[in-house]
Picture (tube, rainbow, N blue to C red):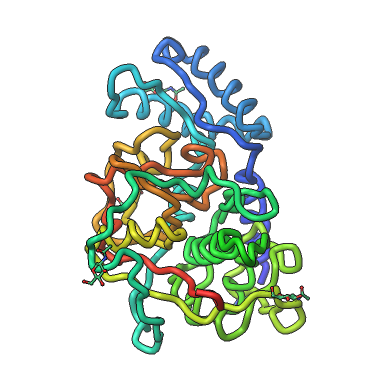
Length: 352
Ligand SMILES: *[C@@H]1O[C@H](CO)[C@@H](O)[C@H](O)[C@H]1NC(C)=O
Ligand SMILES: *[C@@H]1O[C@H](CO)[C@@H](O)[C@H](O)[C@H]1NC(C)=O
Ligand SMILES: *[C@@H]1O[C@H](CO)[C@@H](O)[C@H](O)[C@H]1NC(C)=O
Ligand SMILES: *[C@@H]1O[C@H](CO)[C@@H](O)[C@H](O)[C@H]1NC(C)=O
Ligand SMILES: *[C@@H]1O[C@H](CO)[C@@H](O)[C@H](O)[C@H]1NC(C)=O
């Protein structure tokens, strides 16, 4: 019990350390910032300020070593095109444990009892010409608000599946002009109550869709995300009001069919799965621009596909706005971390 309490306190401290800072894209630096240890320390101070990171003095001592390694790795490993700048994101002084904690173990088991709604083919039989590009993240939907809800932070919890599911439904609710509801749904309810998945130890967005179809879901305001991973969180669904929306099911697109996936995205965003891989520091340190780092070999992360252009997929992640391009990822279509392997899924709302 005492051990648990200590673990809980440590967890809270870690979580506080990673609390989402104000919106910030990657922070630029140059190799000149690495000319001496003093210069790197100055860079660390600048980084703390840029991402509004507050560290205790003794914490800075061990985190500086992480930071130092990050900046040297980024400077030496980044595959650069022309004079693309070197950039740091908000994870530059994170520990190994922190970097690994937000990977999602995807559990393919237990899909048999899930019943998808048949695919409504958006692109005819492959005979429609799709637009060259689409970007839901830059569009305005009903009530003059963005079609895509703000980027969130799953913190030290493998709950990407819950964030991908809520992000998808929120976008579908915002996009339909005749209904256009702006609401933010509770990932914490899914973590605590959807026992088909495994809370902070991973899960699947389609299971979350199934849960929401059966139980509805609370708003984020009524059932907020706690900043500590509570694997055994008490489920509060019964005492928390449901949001006013109807989901009739969800659809699973077939794997390895890019045309179907893109055709669907022209209609609304889709949950997709990719492979990051264990210890993929390049991915964790991604700070905007086209991602050119490595991928893993096993699917381990879910996120929301919100657009594409001829060269890339545009994805909304759930690692806060200090990661990537204000929380978004541009993944090359030719080097796509297995994005087509699982095919993609999306919620089917009452009016679809
Ligand atoms: C910073 O990293 C460089 C390159 O790995 C290394 O040579 C140097 O000793 C490190 N400095 C500190 C203070 O950790
Ligand atoms: C696409 O193919 C389907 C089935 O063959 C057909 O019904 C539809 O009219 C075609 N659409 C266009 C735009 O050609
Ligand atoms: C969490 O659940 C596990 C497995 O059911 C159990 O062994 C453990 O004691 C629980 N922890 C708490 C704090 O309830
Ligand atoms: C729920 O949504 C329906 C359909 O959009 C609307 O008619 C109704 O007024 C809403 N109810 C509440 C309590 O907001
Ligand atoms: C990941 O990196 C950590 C720290 O360097 C190391 O201890 C661990 O063995 C690595 N895991 C794998 C699977 O490479």
